[in-house]
Length: 610
Image 1 (cartoon, helix red, strand yellow):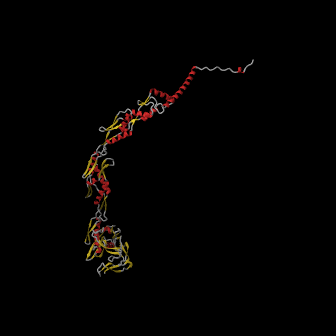
Image 2 (cartoon, helix red, strand yellow):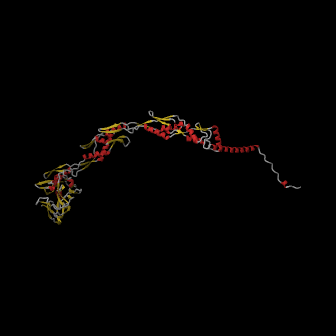
Image 3 (tube, rainbow, N blue to C red):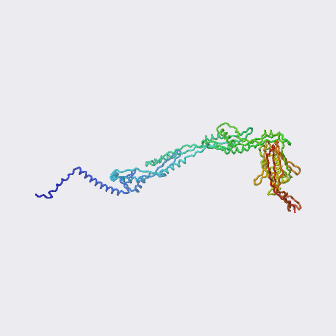
């Protein structure tokens, strides 16, 4: 038996049998895919048709905008809601009101926002979601709310300006100075409005699309008190009235008054340290008043002096304490008094703070010395009375100033302090002076005064005093002891030469000056009185060197009558002179001074008329 290959092939399996439910699922899926494909195509076609247009069924505030372009929608919505710009907002204060037209604050339909919202309908989400959404929109429609806009800044500015206009600034009360006191100027209340509340209320209402055609809001006015009330000013005036009284400053039996008018001039009104309104004291003005008062209070110190009868000292003139007002300390006391017055306390006098200076010689010390006082030295100088010494006045006036001066133990006599200023009002006149090495008969005010200073120098020297400042003349004058002259001057440039000495004894010294005249001859004399102390003064002979003889010449001039002569300069030899003065006490040397004088040569000159 023959077997073919075909016969040997395996047997084919039976064909599968589809169950009914599986066939349904497959068929549904196939159908769904086909439907989605068809829907996608339809959606694509729908979107292409409504590109840049609002989808069907879309309304805004009840206005149908289906299928409109944005520009068409804006035109439609502007026309539909134009009434949003019609209306008035009224802001009232009760007796006044402000009307603000809606148009004035730019109230209008917010078309851009409404168009953008309408265009966005159906254009979000996945394909299926959009198909369903568009179907619902087309079937049932969508109504979006209308929108409104306005310029809130313009609204706020309008209400703020109105609030400023109806507001009233308060006026502070004050106190004005009058000629005889103070007067109150009453304050005035103000009023102020806060625009925040009505601005917020109207802004909220205008934002709503359904706002009525007229809105109203109340702008509340509040009373504003002035910073200084009339009551505060009245209280301040009362305090100032209590302060502005006479101030009596009392020192023992003496008193000085600062008038109420002056005190009033110190007062202004303002906020004090605690912030309250009241009188304010200008303390610099107090110091000005005290500086003026200080001149009245001030008193120079005066040493005790002696009463002289003939050559005897018969009594004592009392000393006097000097005093000076301590302005700063007295200022503090016045401020304390004024504070007490302001607070309603009692008025009182002020005890000034004084700086007291004791005299160098008290009355008691002078009384002890007086019975023992004797003349211990003297010196007299002759001078011809002429225009060269203003006929003696330039020599005698300072002698009379110094007469009676008392130099206490340890005190220093200074020529210019004792004599004071040289003035024509004081009786001085022009006199001789050495200027640039030449004698000028009328060269200086007070010329010739050196005769007086030289005389006192020699009297004090011979009393054994401790001699200080001294300078010789430019050339030697033979009326003076050689090497012991003492010139004094104050130059136009301000340089000064004085003559001084110190009382280095334990007792007071009294200086007596004398004015003596005998025909055309004048004399000045000084006597020194003190308690004898055993001092002995030895004045050595002068040592003279480097003598420089002068020449003498004649000069002819037409300024004099023919044959008349006039001596302009006397010839004086130049020389260097040393002179030693030794003062002994108790066998010991207490002072030894060698005075050196360099005298210049002066050539003589006589004028002869031609």
